[in-house]
Image (cartoon, rainbow, N blue to C red; front, side, top):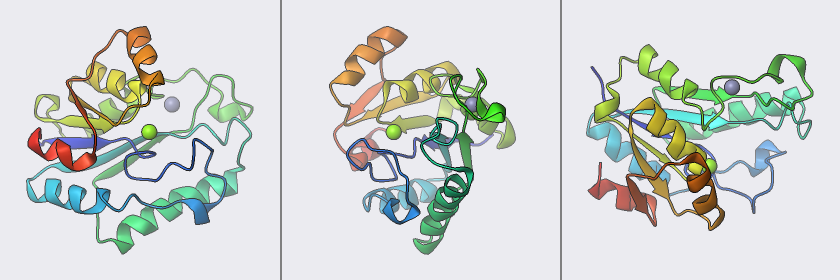
Length: 184
Ligand SMILES: [Mg+2]
Ligand SMILES: [Zn+2]
């Protein structure tokens, strides 16, 4: 069985732009520190899996073309930085969405664990040897439900409330990504 590190995308690998939605692929940039970090983990034998909620298309904030362009841009940036990840899993759903195929109560929108469970099955991953790194309480809850160890990255104040609401605690909290190297 394989070991893996699951990464939330926005705020962990991709720069957040002041809490605003990414509406232009030009604005999608990697967080520079994430690149050597991912490479180190790969050297240690971890599979790298990205798990990301992207409801903006069904919320009407971006159109399908832009959604696809953003997906493509992320892949291109990884490729340009010589990172080949083992899987990228998106949830495009939202129960209040306006696009029928995405407007469902799915099993994969974090805090639900569906994206992780799919990857665990696809890549023969042992959750007990694996971690998730995310900046939101929903990442921590999804990781907890999937049975992986959870690392909360530089949380905003609001996340404390969500952690209480989800009745979950991160196994570790770190200020910056590289601090996770002492844990993993
Ligand atoms: Mg995030
Ligand atoms: Zn979903």
